[in-house]
Length: 327
Image 1: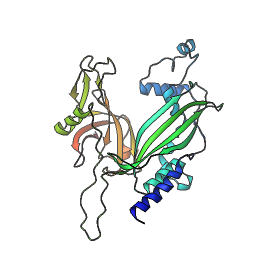
Image 2: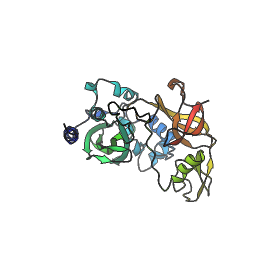
Image 3: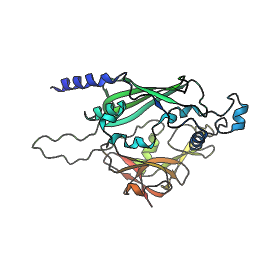
Image 4: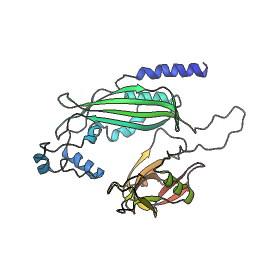
């Protein structure tokens, strides 16, 4: 088959997934409950008393405690067993994982979440059951992006309660792509090109270009600081979330802190990274947090609360990034 015929056959099968239900309706593992609401609010820093103060909520227009609307998806998420989903028998995978595996078999190994739009129709209260109904909503035509060439896949989830009433919807879009810097195949008889693939460069824009300039040119980790109230913030953004001032400068981090949370990325393996790949949210001693990698360690040694020391380093020929090691 010619490349054009191969693409046509691939897309003919790809688009058959549109409209398919990816799994049977999935009830949440837990009812809407006060403990999970409290944990969510603590992590997100949401102090609205209608979520956690029973007396306040009872006297409010809500008539009692409610869950933050943005927890909608949390009630139906799969939990820890999801970590092993990609290692299971393909015949037992849900539809979305089968679709992703199909695309990976054709070279579309990269995945990037791009959009999540939620709509809420009523408040959820402790004791409610949330049931997720998810279908493949749309698949775009082939797109050339900075990450590589691929297809945008959009799923639509309708969330219902124990009475089958619609409580919310979610459109979630990912890009499944062939990494732009994947290694080129070596022609038969030709010498192998000894050049490792590099990571995709992060998006640079008006609000964060200065940050990347400091990282790449001066090998430092800058932290944006509000000139009006001295609040530190990361990632960079145009206004202070405390006083809304648009005036700012920055300080330089000492690159010391501790692990706030972490995950070991298993699959799919992305070109340009060294595995095992430990991704962590680091609480810097200055008070802000940064997402980075913990390197030169065994995965089992990475734990929440462990101290780390960072270094701004050349991770490949194209990228300079802060990286952290256990201390």
